[in-house]
Length: 266
Ligand SMILES: Nc1ncnc2c1ncn2[C@@H]1O[C@H](COP(=O)(O)OP(=O)(O)OP(=O)(O)O)[C@@H](O)[C@H]1O
Ligand SMILES: [Mg+2]
View 1 (cartoon, rainbow, N blue to C red):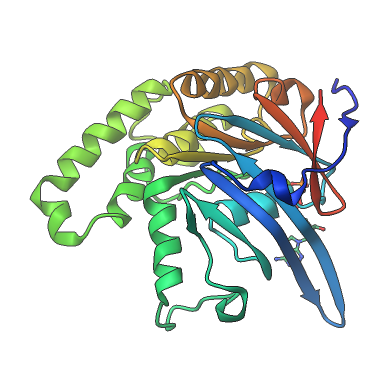
View 2: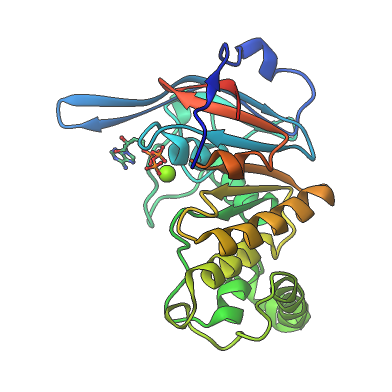
């Protein structure tokens, strides 16, 4: 049973400046729903140092996934900026496109955002998002495949990617399930494959959205032990969880409420 989370004053914008791997400053994200506007993130600030493990908690619907998607360059905020390694992740607000279609010519900022997702960020989604037609090995390989030009792939890229995929699948204990499709795996096994997919390109930041949310205690503990090991090896992790026991694995816990983050203790 989770203990209630104690609240403290919210993170100030000033605190997010300075030397950090990832910062979010004054992030605003809202959804237009007909004539009404659903304001999810309002002047939300965050600062993550290299090697830090941060947990974000908050009520269902408070915007945790939305925030993680913005931090991980998967979604675009209306206002505010995310900085990664000293570089802006999004174009300036007036040049920002909130949706991108297949026929759009990609702007420099959008290309950079895609590169960050391919090379620097790894994402474990709340609902796995494994491709049902692909087996375990292929689901992990696909991350490397989309990040490599066709020629590079056939000129040895595929062998190197396969070796990396096998190494990370062994690490998460899934090397004996390479030919299984996602529907032939347990929930815990699917999550371990999703973790392998997020890690195969050695991301500088791992984002994990409720990595234990759909698992029983034993499977959840295995995932958390893996995250702890990775963190001890220096992996920067930003994790969302509703479970204070899971949040305790992190160096620092923040609470998302009213669109903003504030320090919390669990
Ligand atoms: N694409 C969208 N269009 C409109 N509203 C959305 C969209 N995505 C999310 N929302 C709304 O934004 C709010 C925040 O959603 P989000 O998924 O970020 O919450 P959460 O904190 O992750 O919740 P949970 O703990 O249940 O996963 C919710 O009220 C949700 O209904
Ligand atoms: Mg969520």
